[in-house]
Amino acid sequence: MKPVYVAAYHQSPFGKLMGLTQAEMLAAATRGVCAEVGTEAAAIDSASIAAVCSFSLHQQGLLSGLLAGVPGMEAKSIESVENACASGGQAIVNCITRLQAGMGDTALAVGLEKMRDNAGKADGKRIGEALGYFSDPEERPGKVFVFPQIFAEIMRKYMREWNVDERALASVAVTEYANAQHNPYAQMRGTTLTLEQATAIGGPNRYLVEGLPLKTYDCSQITDGYAALLLATESGLARLGLRRQDCVRIAGWSSAVDPLQHAQRNVLRPAAAYRATQAAYSMAGVTANDIQTAEVHDCFTVMAALAAEILGLADPGRGAAFWADGEAAVGGRCALNTSGGLIAKGHPVGATGIAMVGWAGWQLLGKVPAPLQVRNARHAATFNIGGPVCASVSTVLRAPQ
Image 1 (cartoon, helix red, strand yellow):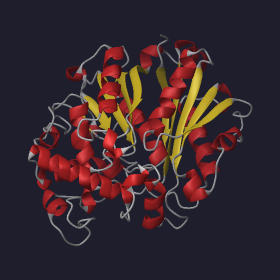
Image 2 (cartoon, rainbow, N blue to C red):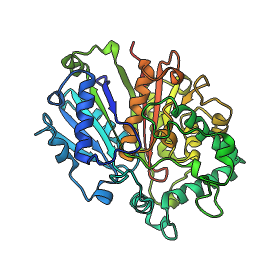
Image 3 (cartoon, rainbow, N blue to C red):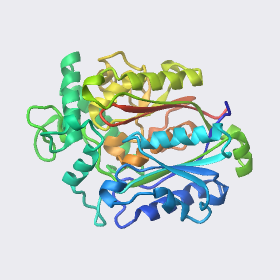
């Protein structure tokens, strides 16, 4: 297979983009990533767009046409990708597939989500309904906010199965809020969180569903944001005037999907997630012991615990302890979500998987803020999920050699 490299990465601040339209977000993402390496959009051969709520929140389809309106992007092969919250990761895999197939030497993976209105306010009920469409229809009845309740049930199942308490899972959010204080793009920068605040019920922290353990601080954010990744083969790098010795390589990648039907999947041992991760490791020729840092899909704290297990960093049932014992911190065994993760960096759904790879690449290039930098990291992993632990995309990145 052809080696594929990250030629450039660019993102917006995550949080509130106010009156910025989807067309403006696509244009800013494209111009921004091109500017990182001093090129123009005309140098991009194809593109894949990830956006999850465009139909439901904006009544807009054919985002490929909006991207084609960016000068230099017209009359090119452009597609839109939907794989729930794993759409960004899937856009990257699709771009790599195009490069492997010889459909050009450069490809743009761009993700975006506009979840708040032009005043920065979020309509929680409307967003909850829109995201609920990505679940099994039989799981929706009786749930006002579908995904928080589904993951509250997963959280209860995890806690009962492995005798884990709420405090251990709350340590995920505490770690990530601390990381976000140093990430200039993070939505929750400027907001600190202690373990006592994350576990105490009162003020902003409450149980979201009666009788279930999920609390406010266990949840990711409602976020506006965009992210763009410019991928290239060695020929593409040469065309862009870049050296492969200066670029991060995507050494392994894979995607897999479990059945959406609740009765047909095991949420504590998701087969697709394990398969995608092991396939990416195998392609890259690494094991979990070779990964020094990773960006994982922590839509809720229980998912961060499961991610540590899926990546092979912790045995089943020990993912929460991996976080609680400091192994996921910068300087720990494998630093997870140094960006702040979805819980503190933000979760602009379509952009999420792309932002994971972008930040992991920055880690390997030594470009993240000093307090978050993992020293001498050679390999990074990402794990992006969509739906109720259903669609999975995993990658392994290798530092320049």
